[in-house]
View 1 (cartoon, rainbow over the protein chains, first blue to last red):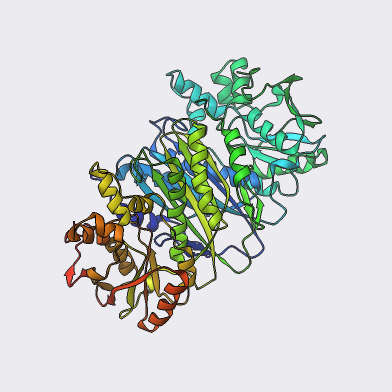
View 2 (cartoon, helix red, strand yellow):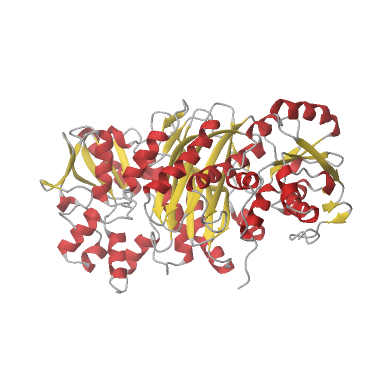
Length: 313
Length: 313
């Protein structure tokens, strides 16, 4: 296929970028110009995905575009921020118009769900790699941080755990991926509405990207607390239950990454509010343990191990 | 050398990041939290550098860190914005602590010159690649855009042109690079103070990254005007004059990239102000032509050609 000239590509992207009233100047100048609403804090995150490291090389281009944005919106969700604007750096081995158009089909499908405007970035020649910077808005003092967990808080997680890791394990074994699990690996759902709703309810929050136990350990370290997790309380999808034996499934739920669910803590007094929220959002919220004094994450009373979570690996 | 664990790396980077009062939460959570000053617009740019594409693979790691930030600060300068915060995505083939520390030596040396705070990002495993998103602040309505050039304006450029391209040409020929030219290739100077001072003086502005004629063509297209350039007026350093014959030198000046000087337009009534500014900043400013009706860039009366600037190639 003929190579895509960078300026043609930028023109094509510009036509598809959503309009927002607070974008003074979008794609096409040296910088975008944005007008943050008065009194709001700006939440900023940047995550990159490399082919073969963060997704299998044969992942559909539209799924790569979706996922690259989803992992960044998930960080905004974990802070309780409302997605606003983003920039994208796309490195491509060659200018393949089919790849680029499909990539942006996935990217803009998710962006449109959240009123998220692409305002700039660049395209370069190189190995397939995507870096996105996402900006969100959050009221001062209301962001969900990692460092607010208190001893006695409940630990909660949204949705189900282990689905993406289950799909990856099937792929690594050369088996066909279960469609429901593959959908979770390729098109994760950033829990933006949940993150917004947790302002004032959750005491701390993190998104599950490295794996529940690893991410909960980050949260505990930031908060100066420990955690006790009830492994049987970790939520599993029917697809995961069907695809794996119970021992393997529990490892995937506890240690598998790429779920992009939210793990958060909240005082026990918030249980009724969270049950109501779960119903409102039609999203399961599971209480999986409690915050303890000390340090480290324990699963069913056993230390989860440092870094590798050997108990589950 | 032993691989660097991502979390150790982040801790080391965090220790070196500059503090700013408007950074509510810096490196270490799902997002950074920033407090834009009331009434200011946010200028955002994102540029990536790939090894072997944007810099020779043997470039010193400290120079890579400097240059990756410089090209982004140059975009802020071209908008007249004051640098504020940034995020960095660093993809590394292997965790080499020596590379990483040297990279950040260069990065933070330049960041410190501009009070620029690194507030987040990520590190991934992959081919050497750096993407940076830089945020600056600019007063509403005072940003230097590409689309403000008017027929009859003078065209100006800062500093000297062609030095970086001259160094690259020496390197491509297998020759030793002239130290003065190599310094311009490896450690470009973003013209931040000039960009700030040009608010209210320049009618349009762009930074010279692709090459003067190419970047001036972008500016003309955005403004709906043409340009007439006097090639003999293009500024050259003594080092460039010493290293190349006049014909080669002129090609490097007109078409060579990576200078990161500012090319801007201003009404003739601004000439005295610009001469004063040049003295104040101790930075040469050269009037190289004028904005014309029509479209396209002409050099000494000859159309510079579409895209390739064949007249000079």
